[in-house]
Image (cartoon, rainbow, N blue to C red):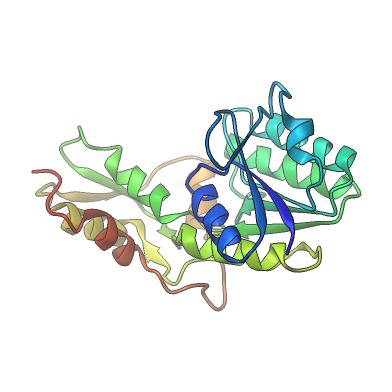
Length: 250
């Protein structure tokens, strides 16, 4: 078992990843800007506490993300290199070269920075999380309709991504490994209908074609993973787990 530092440890992916690493017997340091039980306090942007956080660590799992995504990643990778960490595991996103979002361009830069660092590393790309698709529709709560773009998603469970990350932590550095996508490729409209049923909403779902190169990248399927799907938890399973307590809107 290894001593593992997880950045972004209290986030959407970090929480299940940290829990699964501990269940697997690893000694886990959960990096957070806040102090608390089981947390290693540190700030990737300010640099505060990072030297202590990486001391004696064997594997860095970099999951932290935010507005200064590239700066945080460089800080983590530099600290790992200076501390002589043996393996860096990085989460990334499927299709980042072909979907020209600013956030995705940052992911391309982060992958390159890690690859050029000379450090033993593993890069895992995953499709959008169930929470991301949920947020697309939840964010329209003040709209009289539910708008669904005319392309597909392949949403994946964060818990199943976490399970794959734990496998990679326990393996040798492998560079970029096979991308993973959820068990279903479904149109945004179909996902919106499932979301509508789970929320017991009466609003109509409208499927719209939207302009721009970013949408064209999604429409071309660059956010999907061909071949065998990964995992078994569907978007409907996720919705059932989150909204089973009853209707959430009128």
